[in-house]
Length: 277
Length: 337
Image (cartoon, rainbow over all chains, first blue to last red; front, top):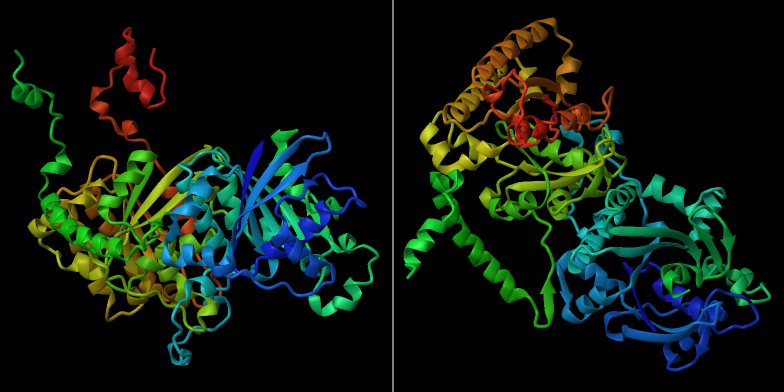
């Protein structure tokens, strides 16, 4: 059986770090995870990422000319069913270009159409509250001396707006067929530092409400799940602390929609591939 | 033997009214420009790439896809330049970025780029200290902003198309029924005319008569051109209401009461459904929240199925036996036994 998962996210969203931690988790038999590697076929790229990840070394950002368009891992489920999971490691710039330049390669469009599910990474640091000028300044025509900036869509448009637009592209390409999306809030440790009781569900509603509305008003074509994940477990500047754990996998923070915590980073993929069991 | 030509002629659908109206020719002429510009875009598409939706405001032609797909409400905002039309449209969109509005959820938009482009200078991250909205001067090629909203109570999605007409566009046809009919007759399909009175100018004794005069003439030009239907609704909006309110002047209040009354009388000669709204979309810091009054406006723009507007002259007050005859009432959501 084959499954295709399309992995999305704007630059720096945490896609590659997730894949590095994923390889380590599925390839490590000492700790139980829902999905395990059944056999190594061509895991060189993921193994290289994982090698750096275990030592909490910075990973090189994926740029357009070193994108991995069709990674394949052969996985086994708890009930011993095996399947090939295909997914790409695309550069965030690829999605940025879709938003700004309004074009997608035919190859990628075909991947989107064929995908069984979407894994959409959102870095929590990029989620900013919307600030209106009248709420911050006393309006007076005399004090508008600030230099007029030119809008740069990727830099200035709210992150949730960009995510909605990219999702609209996906739905459009798929002919508005039912689509399963898993949103991964990456660097989840940053959220927990600020508010330990925050759950992914609450974060979604409080900080990305327009996206929440979009998902909840299109339930006939869009099913979604939410995860808070810190694949690294903290900032790389705190490397010494990160390396104090006995097993690298213990650094991983995985939290489901309602706040159940663990370190099984395969859970989002497992939940997306539910019908395999 | 069947005469192919005559069969074709017999099977032809009756010509739609919109096809007969003079503006279609003009719009088709405009389409030539559209095709040219689309051609330019097509040339820019790299080999092996597909073009994604532009996200910019829609042309009239592009609205057909929206209207054919789902229930649609067309709102035409009318008012002179800088009266706050675009700010009303964009602030409503931006309110959804914080929360649902008046029981409506944001379900999508085909014009996200159009909205973002127009909204940027109202946001803190534009590094400006005064909120501004770029003046609309895009012609008929980028006319409509689009919102798709989900009504939580009715559990239904409705499209809202906002005609982003420039002040100049309307003023070019002021007091000229023929010119308006020829160039903009599509506005007769508006479900709502949202007529905007600039609150800032109303607060100024030297300008307020001009505001009322200008709006009265615009309204008369549109309605005398017959660009409305039985179901059209009109909202009179006092925009920038925070400025008017801050003046706290009983003379201005009295002036407004009398003149709004006169405007309502004028409109009611043509249309029964007229309402008055006070709006401060991007108010100065103070007593009003951003988007003041927009929730009320959204509920007035509510989608009403066209069959509900059937001519009541056909109604009868005796029992009906035929299911066909009962259809009139069933479509209107009523029981008639």
